[in-house]
Image (cartoon, rainbow, N blue to C red; front, side, top):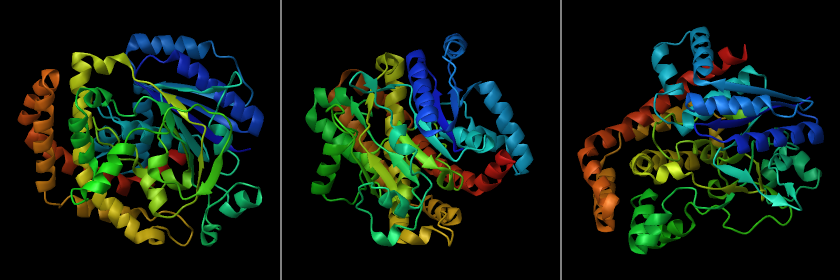
Length: 429
């Protein structure tokens, strides 16, 4: 029986989503005969977590589904045991990278990867607490429908099974390593207000996540498709393709990885940084590993908290840190793309040491491009006025620290990649 981990990390009230994901778990077990480990990683406050516990206790039992609702204390105990068993230096620092005091999109998923390994799972399927399933004919549209049949199997088997393909036949022996779709609804990054206030400023700000050397035409095209997912058109019927999946076509709220990917390389553990959990999408793509791109898109919505004054500042800082991280990640993505199939060893597994070398290279890059980004952001936010101008004032006082963080976060990621094999082995055993 195929054991899988269906994971929902959360730091907010989401009882409706918990119930919906449990229904997807039951569907995976009944339709595909999977042994589903439903993993809820709960970083919510005590009151919210208690509400989640009541929701979990009230879930309808489903054959083949085991529910794990873990608060941060239990997660920390697991991490400490794992780190100690791995025998790695600086254990407290590793635990901080895996469970930092601040929000980290990559770190929460890394904990899920380790727990999936400990549970003996073959794949991890991630959903988000600020999203919901579409309905079609009154029934929920579960992404697991496309994730389970072929994940981990040679691409040639999927083609022989009738799956539409545009994959180079030379890659047909490689394993299907990823399955994913995107979202419909609101922008994945909450910058829609900037666009409503000033289209030109929106273009300038969003365009800053492109490499600094890109020509204007290419930057414009990136802005047009950034954070829009699959648009707004609802699901009307299944479409799926075996391909090398473009990272721009999928979202981390709607993704599944085979263990051969996430047990080799983790995600960046940077704190307060939007997009820090997307690295593996690029790695799978650049290595030429096959994936399944489907259209069971999830509905995205924004929670009210990030529109409050406190939430606004925190969210905009996460967005700025994302833009600054791109100096380093674009360098790594370019190096990985040039390496191509060389990223894989003779067993078609990612060479983690190659990824580490690229990350370490990127920490020595000149900062002038990021200084330019901060200058452009300062101008843009002050032009918008109001709380954006006030945020620009805060940003000006944090410039040096933000520049340092972009570099140190990348170095910390390289350290975690080096430690990852030992952590995975310790979790599995």
